[in-house]
Amino acid sequence: MKENYSGIWIFAEQRQGVLNPVVFELLSKAQELKSVTDETITAVLLGSGVSGLADELIARGAERVLIAEHEALSVYSARPYQQALTQLVERYKPSILLYGATSQGRDLAPRMMVALQTGLTADAIDLGYDEDGVFFQATPAYGGKILAHIVILEKRPQMATVRPQIFDPLPPDSTRRGEIVTETVEVAGDGDYEVLACAPKPEGTQPIDRAALLVSGGRGIKHETDFAMLDELARLLHGQLASSRPPVDQGWLPHEKQIGQSGTTVKPAYILNVGISGSVQYQVGMQNAACIISINHNPDAPIFGISQYGVVADYRKVVPAIIAEICKRKA
Amino acid sequence: MKILVFIKQVPDTEDVKLDPRTGNLQREGVKSILNPLDANAIECAMQLKARYGATVVAISMGPPQADAVLKKALALGCDESCLLSDRAFGGADTLATSYTLAKAAEKIGDYDLLLFGRHATDGDTAQTGPATAAWLGIPQITLATSLDVRDGWVVCTREIEDRIETVRAKLPTAVTVCDTINEPEYPTPKNIMKALKKPRYVWNAADLGADTRLTGIPGSPSSTKTVFEPPKGNTDTRYFEGSPAEIAVQFVDMLEREHAL
Ligand SMILES: Cc1cc2nc3c(=O)[nH]c(=O)nc-3n(C[C@H](O)[C@H](O)[C@H](O)COP(=O)(O)OP(=O)(O)OC[C@H]3O[C@@H](n4cnc5c(N)ncnc54)[C@H](O)[C@@H]3O)c2cc1C
Figure 1 (cartoon, protein in one colour):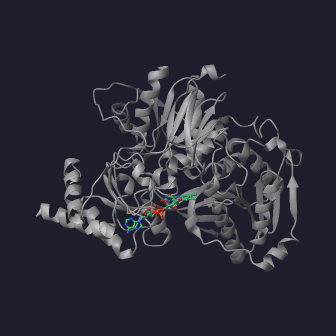
Figure 2 (tube, rainbow over the protein chains, first blue to last red):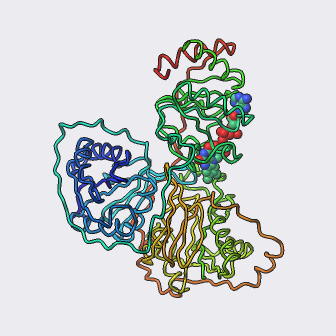
Figure 3 (cartoon, helix red, strand yellow):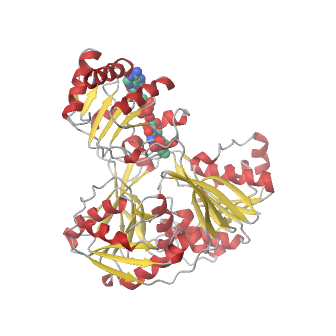
């Protein structure tokens, strides 16, 4: 019976003892949900030798941290994690269970859906309660052209993977108090799945979703060499180069640089769009940037509709002038 | 080796609109296509078949017209097709869909590898592959960017976040593939002709031995309450005007004011 379920759970994804920042974003959103239903916020931490992370979770908004440690949980793999988390859910019966829509969250959550026989919304970009007091998950469909509100009416817990970089985390506050509970779980190691090797991606650059400033170029960029100019501007501003999809399809930039529905969602403090029209698929990936600045020679480009600052001009004239001006002031 | 490739007919994303009157999805005049990432899954199966030999079965759940994507799969080299079609399957979320697909896999039996596109461009959930693996109790590898089979194990690379993982899973296993894994081929006229002679099955709930409390709407804990178009931007934009040098001065002033410099 759904009445027996209560509490908001956040899956505290960690890798090699480091919490994924999306966990803090979800804890912050959970605080907002709590203001409606007054449910307890629990972070669920699975792993081996990870209990030291509990304080960080409390400082970021968890009221309770449930820790289950096991040798078979030391490196993430879907089936042992599913077994452990299922046992905890069955023991405590939370009404909501949220995961980051990361590679790990999206690997684990569908197996949880089957194990618990409940609903799972994919890649939510918002969560809330509607007029009828029903918990909904807003999720883009059809490449972001349409938003749908999904509800899970009878089954519990109501589960969703939630896209990173949508909600602002709470600043860490070490005066917060919370309960730490250690639970035991029975887990069989998975002999049928094995991580053989793990290497950082070549190039060594910071991923675009961690940059504070992005200079992003699109199909309007005429030559591959012009990306070097955008890269120079990005460096001068201590930021990173990014792009819409066409330059990636063209083979000019690696897929890691692509913003959007089929690329990465970013939420930098500043994004400078150059020669980008602002398709829905691009906008879903960057519309939460705090400050959006766009350069496009077409005054009707949709990107201006979400930009705080705009320049209607040919980038080939304006960008070199901006670079020169910055160098002048830095000198 | 027996490979099952799960494919889906989706509306062409470019055409999707909401009916301004009803607020529902407009279905008329919308082209249906093979989910683009499923073409990568089919190509993956074809490469394995060429390398090691395999029987490849293409499976799709959908209304009778979804047979079009199965025909395409046969023309691309799959050996058999199964259309899972029943009114009782309609309105399924990913839990009910994955149950139905798992029942089909069980009916076919002796499978070694289940292949899925990373996600479908309509619902965009990327949940069906791992959920089907869960119903069958087999391992999964999601987001594969390369795939090979060696000594009863499938070995894949996964490019995730800031790293590249090499993982292996013991057969039978399910793999979801990214679009960077290969370049899908086009059907050749010869293969289109050949496709006409290949076995094509149509199965309903009874054929699958599926429990109809677990399929379609009854088997779907989640439902769509409303759909709408995302709000259009209407930010007040401040434009910088003048010669490039004048624009540059205002622009860099702005960067300084905004503390971006
Ligand atoms: C399922 C699906 C997923 C997709 N996923 C993504 C995704 O993740 N990311 C993504 O970006 N796209 C994605 N797309 C593609 C998307 O629909 C658009 O085609 C794409 O975003 C367009 O990129 P763009 O704005 O760079 O190019 P365009 O739309 O061609 O715009 C180029 C702009 O450059 C301007 N311009 C040209 N020359 C100059 C100049 N000299 N100076 C200044 N401005 C100039 C033009 O006015 C124009 O506005 C997806 C599409 C589908 C169907």
